[in-house]
View: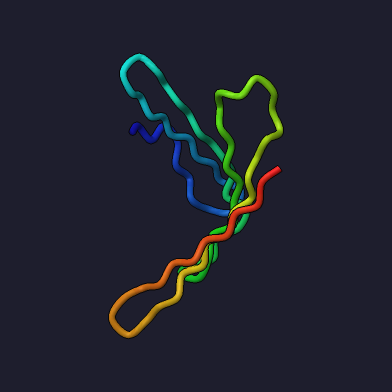
Length: 78
């Protein structure tokens, strides 16, 4: 996997690409809210679809435990 863009801040964006054999898959999105160390809210899209607008909105919440961190993610797509 190649990370092409990674700007993890409010309004920042990301894009990464995975290549397997002769196929290439790219994914991208926007970080809508980055509240360190509590949560990240952002979008996720697949770059290979013929039409735009099929995005997933995701929220990832980090909870500090005594000796580890619990990560919970929820995603909604359309």
